[in-house]
Image (cartoon, rainbow, N blue to C red; front, side):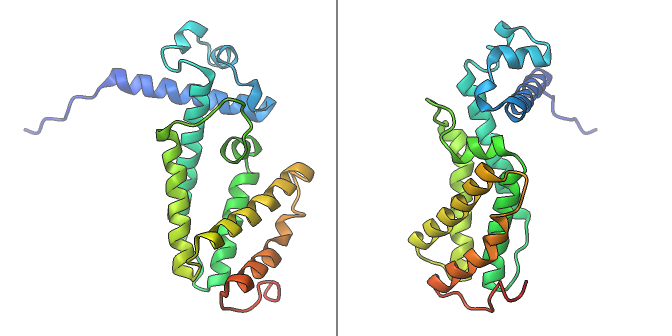
Length: 203
């Protein structure tokens, strides 16, 4: 007769409560902005007394930390699951378009992950780890496509980040800067010597 391992139900309940707290914090951030996330507001949203919340998160920054780690973990999983076109220019464009789609889907999330939107907040090593994995995976992927230099990866990130900042600042619900991606990736590909037909002529 097989014996199933004992479940730690208390740990499961605690983890479920932490997820509920983080979900509530995201809801507040998306509705009212990241700065509106407070322990009192989160506790009220999930029907918990503020002192009880402290047994799960000892500060507002601890909640931001959990949000930061959760979001980068999600993006990392999406990166690993998405197939890329075989043609190098198309593949680089697909990477940029995925980053755009992930970012534009949630402006509060983009601000937490990519801008210094919270004064005094620095993610913990554990929360920061998936973002390091994202950069490592990006570097490996671009290297496989023919972009080996670290400075070229920096340029790619700067181009994508600049377009995203313009999009979110000026037309968060539109596609004005999104439409520039094929042109920008073509310029990047020309600069780093990636082969293939022009993206602009194929679209």
